[in-house]
Length: 69
Image (cartoon, rainbow, N blue to C red; front, side, top):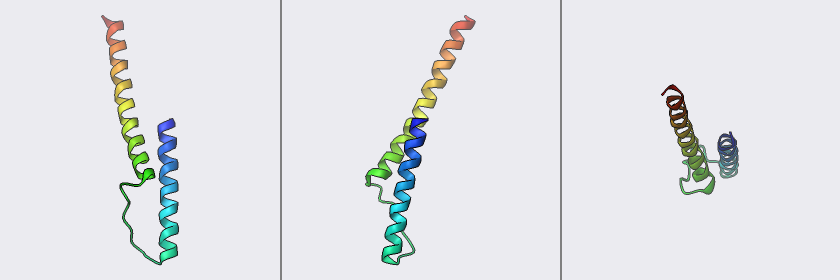
């Protein structure tokens, strides 16, 4: 849940800063800066959620298999 919250907050702050920059410059198009700290944080949190979910599923299967054997 913590990874989800951090990913959401990083995405929100990143989107707000991009919107502010677009409004100030008058541009209508943008690209995400993949080297920006908030973008990297979002990606790390997303990958962390996937990894933790897979690890929990494997652990659950191991525990269940131990109970059945």
